Image (cartoon, rainbow over the protein chains, first blue to last red):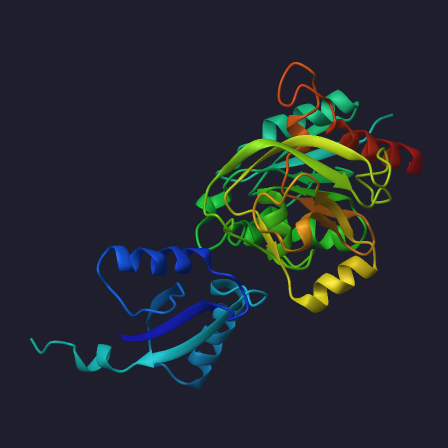
Length: 90
Length: 227
């Protein structure tokens, strides 16, 4: 089964107080030098059948209409090749 | 003859009972709608009440938007049926794009629960005619995803068309852009706001006032006059 990953991030101009809270916590934990943190969502879709152009078009549609709210978020769809390669031989 | 006001219950809705009660106190006939209903039982208007529909998974209101009952509500709202979205209901209305913009986590990341002063900016919508423009009212506010955002162009358009229906009047509780607490669509039949008028309809409970009752008397007058 092939895996398609959809990453959803708040648009750059949208304030991300959760990311800011993470960033502010870092120095307290001894992690220096991180200037900014933005928090997003990652969806891993296990796709039945081949991940061809038609399948990717459908996934793009589902990301655009459901997984992301494009008023406030950007999204990226990518096929994760390693999921297929990593299948263990039995 | 009175009007039938439907209130939708999704899994996770909390304030449906109070919304039904507010409709009844205003003199309307309250009608319960279930999220699986495909038929709206001949209601004249719909209230989407507060709560955490479908656990607010993914985004507040994102899953409720695709529930069976919403298909009819979206269609009829476009044809002019009055719809009021309160809190989670407002989040659902932005997710359906019946109202522009989106709701995000409060800028301070805390849940807010307090009495909130609002300024009524537009007293001509289907849900605000019993108020006067500029009037200040006090109703409860309780949420964590209450920060209204939209791009600058959309905000300018809302302001220019008088579609900012309510603004926070005594300090911005959540970082909402331009202090926006509620908005209306261009036709004035679809209104959404974060604070809870349905919790301020009886002197005994809530804020101790009845500042929220005007939403329900407004819609009742409009519907009864129209029929």
